[in-house]
Image 1 (cartoon, rainbow, N blue to C red):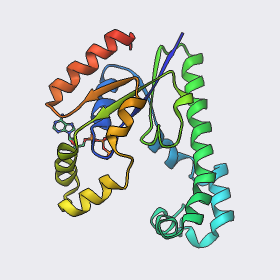
Image 2 (cartoon, protein in one colour):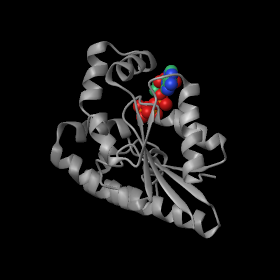
Image 3 (cartoon, protein in one colour):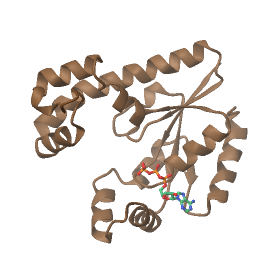
Image 4 (cartoon, helix red, strand yellow):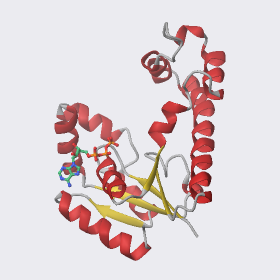
Length: 199
Ligand SMILES: Nc1ncnc2c1ncn2[C@@H]1O[C@H](COP(=O)(O)OP(=O)(O)OP(=O)(O)O)[C@@H](O)[C@H]1O
């Protein structure tokens, strides 16, 4: 029986760091962000639906979707945002499930679905178990400011626009506390891998 795990976190919580550790262990990762870009490529169903809904004005000269333009349209209009999500989200879910099924059919024992909005988008039914990569607020703020070269105010605004990480703790089957060193995080992941037989 294959084990499917949903990996999530918050902005700059260390999800990619943990995801890379899993990759190094040879675990298959299906990345929702990568798939979200793939499903809006020219020729895909979602691409055609977006062009139909938003018009050809959102295309660049090479016919690819102008993500910056589309981003600013949906940033200012909730209605447009919901419309875009109603096209993109089902396409992402469908593609993730298809890839998951393919790995299972090929005999892969553990598949990790890396999904930033796992809890917010209520996608937990796609996986058997969930892992949250957690950091406390002050550490998250500092790492985000350092990584993205942001002011304290801008970093706080980004963190505060998300569901508080603390609220995700009771929703997760396992929590990796990433406040300490990378090594301390790796040790927690190794312990969990043993417990859950991640291989
Ligand atoms: N334990 C740690 N100690 C020190 N720095 C860390 C640790 N974990 C992660 N970092 C650093 O903090 C930043 C955020 O980590 P990472 O990119 O893994 O987070 P993320 O959750 O994937 O972020 P996002 O979803 O915003 O892309 C990175 O610059 C990373 O190198």
